Image (cartoon, rainbow, N blue to C red; front, side, top):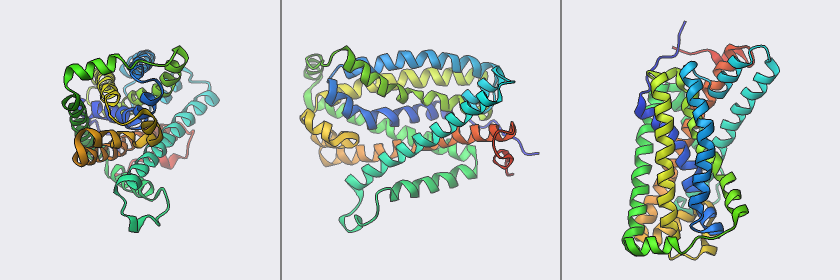
Length: 323
């Protein structure tokens, strides 16, 4: 019988969590958050991180006890062994959640492609073409094996972190460190309700840590690696969020334009800091980000689907592991 092999080390586990969280928030929500509440977006993201941290601590504890694939579905099925309807509902909710977020990432990526990359001569293609093509490519990659998928995740996540560092550096170079900090300090806005509303939107961005736990069965030394990777990815992405918000607040692009641009706002802001080169960097980073987040979500969804098949709550064939 073919079984899962533990091939993912700390670096890849860290990249799975970080890659998912960066895509979900920095490229998709930072423009919306800054347009709504300015510098207070940092407070909103920190609140979301603290709340998510409570859930992350529970995931880390369970992953130390049950070091197998499946994440939240595994933990609930072990805790409520005789409650089949409950565990099935949780498993399907998580599976559909991961597939839904994959669709969200790929749809956002498609917007970046249409907005910045697609030549006018190809605008006759229906919206979603790039997203569907990427989904097929990622499915093929994951069918090759987890090790290949994990290595790809590490490379792409490293690339987009480098792009974000260039974006942040461009903002400080454009304004100067003291001016950038002063402008950030002067732009706090929104009331408690507005901040909590953005926190609610931002919460899902931190849920990328669950993708690490969902792949615990293929992580080397999971009882040690999973909690470390979860903690490191959440801390790193919170710091990155804060600096990206500072950069966005210092943009010469008006807030109403940032709001209008929505999920592609960072491309417009990068162009104002770094010119066409900066815009190209951010476009590449956004696409890398959405692809790596989709890849991590596919990894997590497949592990949950496989465990559901093993437990008889999904077709048995989805739990079969080809050589």
